[in-house]
Image 1 (spheres, rainbow, N blue to C red):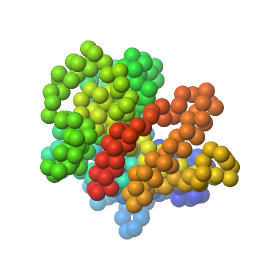
Image 2: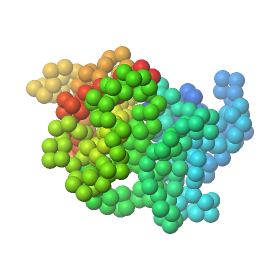
Image 3: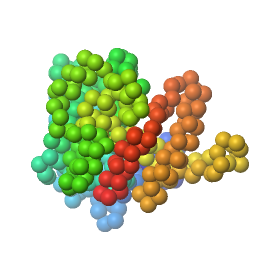
Image 4: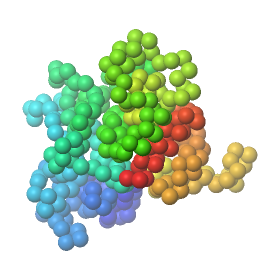
Length: 340
């Protein structure tokens, strides 16, 4: 999650088109999860020529190989519907949304999850990135592999208004992507009768009426004791939403731990005596270490990150509580992901 500049070896942010330290042009090669130096005539790596995406002027820094026979990179080709080209306001918002989408894809690749495009398989992954600011009615959601998001959510004031009105402690564009991809992977990863039985035992029967659940949720709200068994109020609405919220939180946790690991963050027992009784060393991969180790690391790292945010006058980075029922749901997600 923290690649380096190929020229000066400085850490490079995933959205950079040029290195912030040495200034060389950068292009991200998704097949190796690393940056190459981007040349106008193309960059040769491992016997293949990589060129900048045709949407680079709109902020995309990914590369596309000549063998892909397209001017658009893999991430951009996953976008099924976009605003009209003459809607420059919507396309400006698309730049920020694209950053979140590419960050999501990088994490999916890091976790080894399958990403099959919508134009290669029925029910494959695709994105409709539309803007309600353009007068179109946009409903955020997932259907048959297609994730629809509203570009208006990139506006801080718009998103914050919805966050407060809906009683959500956390709402970001990346959070939307992670939640909706949870819906997608429930149908991709839960396949056997045994898996569906285990899934329903934890999250509830997803065959229950979704429309009835929506009406009930917005009429009555979450149960008073929702925090005992759910990661969020929204998760209480329907078993689909409980799974998607749990999947999103799994991605929140693993993504942040991977970044901490890449940065070399360690909580040393010698430095914080009386708080922890062991060194906390985050890892980039917990598939072999197990979720108990992952959540123990996350417990201490999230406390530290929350204190950092408060030091800057911000709200907690991770304003959630992991109860035993929630941990059981995260364990189920972890097993799905590692098996995949």
